[in-house]
Image (tube, rainbow, N blue to C red; front, side, top):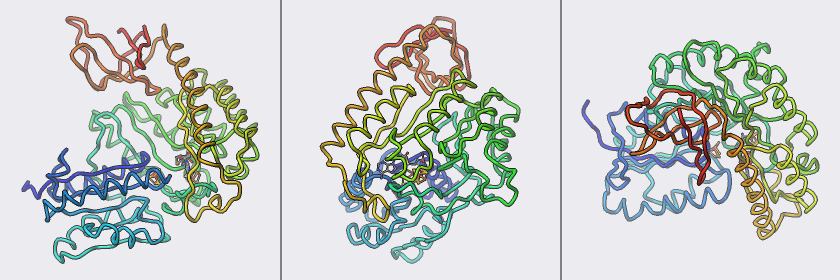
Length: 444
Ligand code: SAH
Ligand code: SF4
Ligand code: F3S
């Protein structure tokens, strides 16, 4: 194919964005562009943005700003900005004002049209602003070319948007209401991916996978049912999914996870806070007690489940007592890992207007305290793995070790032994023998 030029994509935010960058790369690939690792030599640079917290936005704006001297040297470079940030009110206009060198801005609802916008820009040499409001993007079943980043894991979107309106969160504003992909389309995509032969994990994506199918007329189609069907597809692969909202995690789903060996036992179940008062103010629609009950059910039916979570500290009105409840909850659940964030005000959300915003110094204190507690718990998890057998996927190697990942996503190093060749991209069962410096060490 005639090469049109080179592309570079900056990706920020969640797995959804990582996968959407794979779509954007696919569109550019179809147009004859090839990937480069050096942004200076790219003909097309795309910023796939995130606006979940102010810190994310600041970093992105800094990185877009850094393009000014690069573009000054390469006047033909095309700079496009897309993703969640662009979908907020007035952002497109402000971006263009601040960074006049931007050539194309598009939103989350029209990713698949990027190729057309690029053609229009090339033809007219005129700034293209393409934001579609009040809609939810639903993947076109005809869209096939993804340039996938990870050689062993393939992402598959099962739904788009979010209906939950947690009071702190911008996602429902920038991603629209929930829309689920038809079941057969998802099954076909997974089968096609597996037929390639190289993908060993399939990760299903949605802001709240547990509400998959709620928008269908046929109410018998839910996430547990989808997962059950996918888990019966032939082949040696593992099924993962994210994210699960605790309010919609059903007993049926826990049973399906327990019953089908292909479904990963690593479950991400964001709790956000341990205080009922704060959970209510967050509009999370579950209580601490309900959450702990869920955790108990999971550990009862899936004894080797590893739980991870997201937590926000410093939500408006969070007192020392509320925070202490979060502290006690993470000690009780013993997550294998927790992603902890300081609350960040988002424009247009309910929490933005709440009184008793927590001072940054208090947020910092609380996050540091929680991080320290969680670090101990995470270390404990690693140490408990010593002496156990684990199924791992070898993802790479260096001079002395094969680098593998356990099913709960922990790195395990396997020392190379003479005449003992392992295949990258294959599963092996190993004995975990040690834990040093953040890595597990294993023997076949
Ligand atoms: N849909 C997923 C998560 C999306 S955002 C879910 O509901 O679990 C990922 C995480 O970012 C959230 O779980 C939350 O912990 C955090 N987050 C979202 N909005 C935030 C904000 N305004 N300030 C700080 N953290 C936030
Ligand atoms: Fe945001 Fe809540 Fe939706 Fe997750 S469930 S994306 S935290 S509004
Ligand atoms: Fe960020 Fe959008 Fe994901 S705001 S976290 S990239 S859905």
